[in-house]
Length: 402
Image (cartoon, rainbow, N blue to C red):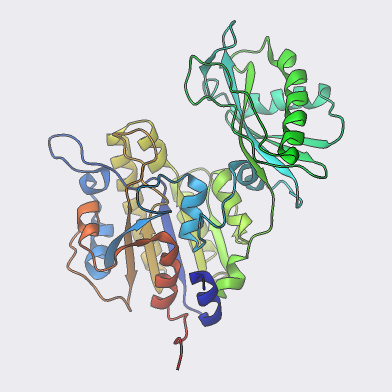
């Protein structure tokens, strides 16, 4: 029996509240003369106080040695087995902008990019063009591109990213990305692994053949890369499994999409960090599970900016008293994966976890950091077990067996 199936049988409805605060890409690697990670170096008295009162551990989002994407990382946080419930980024992008996907739709994440005269990619993100320019280019394409044999929908997401959705019978998503992941190479050839996927490739090729001359003279976004092919399917709903009324407080479309995919109510929130915690307070009486997402830790890690990642963690720490003041029964602080600034990318390293509750058995930790977490009372576990720990400490699980 899967852990989610067991929890669904044992879950009970109560008034207790759980806050899951996710600092995207939180885990790091030690650098510099102090030989500390970003989390260890940050001045974070509020998190350290919670660490002393709570328990720490390390979680593997997928499995040991496996580097997770953001989708699998968050599904693990929500208690889903990310290997069983694998979902592509295209669906997440589309859901993140509230696109009404239907079962069988194939969604694709697009990167508007820059290529040179030889067709070689010189910038995979077209200089991170503005969302406004992205929207104009999408409208230009939609006005002129006509596809036979399927409906298509093209919508801007954020900066250089857009979502492309095809709607027709018998479409597949077993297609490799056209993004070469490096500059100096041509976009990769898209090949479908089965007939349904080859049907999708034919639609994409038809779309690209018409879009290329439209973008040819544009600067800097003069080409498209296709990523994250994903057919939409229904997922077991979070609230049904855990007997919760859950909401998501996230600013970036993908994470809003992930929450919507599993049935959380996605709340509107402004662009600043303060806005996340203001929305948390404003909606405290309406829900009993709050997923709060911080993106900037991950962005700093991917940029290789160790100092900025430290600053983001310190900025989050200043907000912690706002959450504590609301008196949740359980407060979890963790990440969806590690993004060490030393590597400038996601990594396989386990993620630090802090679980605070009045019902927790405290360990000997005195601060929140990777080394402390490696010695913590929660031990090292698969991320999919985190929701069970949160539910138990919120007294939301009945006894198993006689």
